[in-house]
Length: 231
Image 1 (cartoon, rainbow, N blue to C red):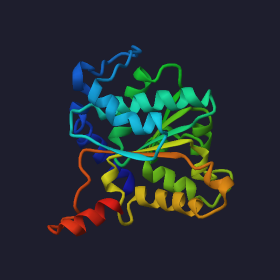
Image 2 (image 1 turned 180 degrees about the horizontal axis):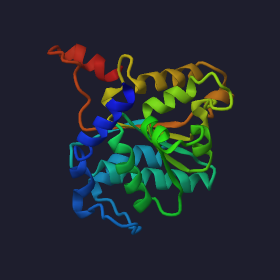
Image 3 (image 1 turned 120 degrees about the vertical axis):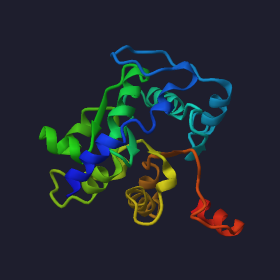
């Protein structure tokens, strides 16, 4: 079943993105040491739209370019500007990445509480409702699937009221945001709020996507590939 599948993913996929965490000499240590974060010039340029203009943006950069650390910089700036009232969701589509990314943010996002959640973790540890974990942390690293389930939960005490619970949502490997993928389902919630009044729209979170490649949807036609990227 789904639980067994997540266990298998956890076993086999844990090291797939390990290289991303060792880029630019910033190796992921095995202890709880809190480290300073200094971006290189090309990294500063890539995060400038997200940090300086607070725009929704996609950071497209190759593997080993330090995207994880750029994201940590964006998160730090976002929470500092929000002066304690910001709430960040970092979403992944594979269970092994939850622990991996949460570990990085605990080292580079100084003074902010970092929580983590996936369906596998909640089953194994018998955790309470996801909404309670979200309330008690400023940064949440989660699988997209558990967020979709919380948004669509019928039990009001377990339901995540809306994506406006977050002030910043970051999609890891955002090229997956197509079709019926959990990323796309979350963005459908976002688009619903975009069509509402100004008061609701002003509460929408900033959206950041990170990817090594936009993909072309297997199209060899330039115009169709372009349309895929824009969508």
